Amino acid sequence: MLSGITEPGNRPKPSGFRILWRKTAHFPETRVKVLYDSLNIYVIFNVRDQYVRAVEKEINGKVWMDSCVEFFFSPGADTERGYFNFEANCKGVFLFGYHPGNGDTSGFVSGKIVIK
Image 1 (cartoon, rainbow, N blue to C red):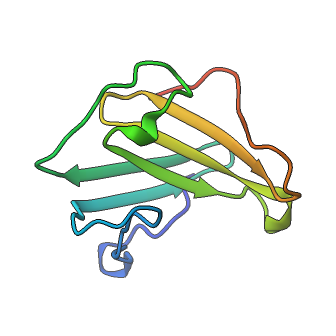
Image 2: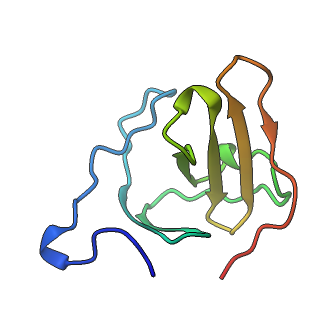
């Protein structure tokens, strides 16, 4: 069973997407939907942009240099333990990172990425 807000009238409308680490006046129209079940998180982004860059080809490569989307999450309530970040460029190249809450060096999550 999927969880999340499924009634059309009750869906929150995320807004205010910003590139926090770079000053720019360009903010493409972006929509996102997030659902989850006991095993998976489902994220769908829809971005409309007239400026598109898609160069990176390697998994866990520098997708942040391309036109990309990011999703940050912590699997539990204890955010002090760190968080994961999932990034994808518009070619479908992914980065999956982990950032520990103790200040240790961040790293990439290895393993199989399944796209359904």
